[in-house]
Image (cartoon, rainbow, N blue to C red; front, side, top):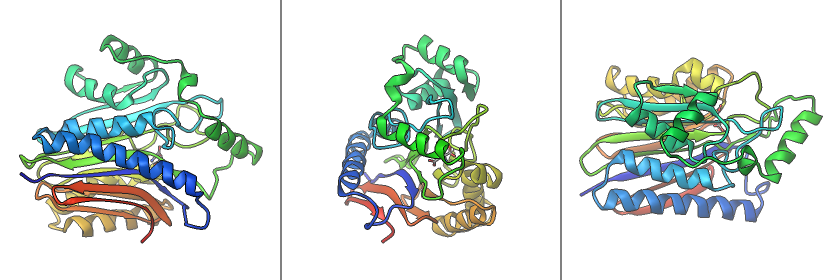
Length: 302
Ligand code: ASP
């Protein structure tokens, strides 16, 4: 019985010289905990869909990452949360964007996949749906941490311009289960100082999240606008399916396309064969992988 789980906690400018040992340790232990949760599902014969949801949920609840608690703030100091999940077996998908009160956006996306006739729900309607589904509701302040508030203050003091030293802390998980099915999940607070109801790539099926048993399951992090324009996650799968490219070649080509559009970012992907790949155009990316043979956790570009 073989399976593979790959997760990311975002990419960015982290280097050994600039990332504090404490921040590195917090990120590493968060990734370990998410691997534990997802691997427990897969090693007992569970589905890739369940595994990516539980792994994403652990990372959402961890304030070290830009998803759920610890999400970045909009210009008016709120968290607006986006998430998507997709099942490679039948390409069923659920997504939510602009949520402000639902504790586990990835589970709201899963509920949309299972219990809604729609794929993408947004803002107050998405939270109302999640509430109807019995998902825990919290005050928006629950998501806000002092660290994210300080980041917003810094960006606003600089005139609201995006920080070039940015760390994209979105989280994602992709898995292939012992039946050979793939699934993908992505969850994020988006970009610091976003406004006007901005929605990034993460909850958009085909941009930041995609899963198709005929090719791969994919989750992205980075400048969402570039991934939307590149239709990054879907492009990766189609390069494999139609273009016959290998998983790693397709992933590298999508990242090159994102860079050509002025963006930066990272991708994780798995294929039904069990093959797994990652890549990023920033100095580092929080990333980890587990399979039947063991696990690895990385932060820097090594
Ligand atoms: N891709 C996310 C977005 O643009 C940001 C991130 O990866 O941290 O919303």
